[in-house]
Length: 350
Image: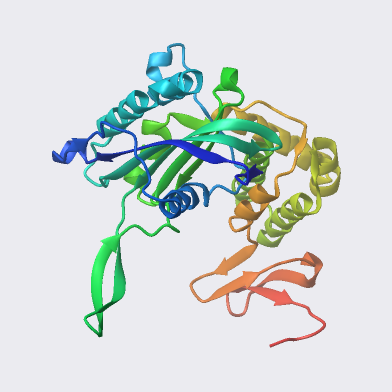
């Protein structure tokens, strides 16, 4: 959990970083930004820190040469020598400009900030923030002038919609630091990793969220790739297994492989098949096998939408199965030459 109740914004610089590939310009500020009043400073503080509320943490990727990770190098310099803040913020802006070559990457304002006394999972630390605003909104400005009320339109930044952001906490420095990353404009597959990989060179930290996400994805993959009709597994049995796996994570604070095998997989042949699949899954994504870990509610909630038990019948029907798979029968009508599902129920609701 991240708390900013004691935090203070002590250093702040803003630069303009256009799209290098499209010939847009980069403008580097030669001085730190000084807020004209407390309201501006408080507004910026809220704009930068508001979105960071989850337990999803990242770290800089490990490299044999620190020069291959410019943002990590910038953070190390800032933490060790705050006086170098402006120079290092310019260095970060130049690195971002260098990575901004794809024609679909939007230019915008690039902010670098230094925070003191941020509370991260009960640890007090300093943090360096990198933020980028790419989208402008139209606002109505209503004002009184010469006895009349007038209205004007202005373009500006919505302080409730941070486009891109990253907070690097001065924790776990030997393991690539502890980071939080925000990117609300990553839906375009061509530039989805521009902020996270090209600029930050970051990866998920191996914590509760990381382990829960990976194991739930492995469970879903096992159901969709192994428990299929070509392996003589009926669709409702696949759905039942998917439901049981999801239910296991929803009901527990701690994952234990032996419990998962006993309560979800149950049958020795399924346990063996899942272990083989999980081994291949780990090799495919370069993961370490782990038998016990804390379950992350954030990961469970995020993964739930991908683990829905839905039977799709041609283009006409979708059957959502939430439980009681023994109330579902599947068969074949020889007279009509069509497959069918038969559902049993107690009460009908509208």
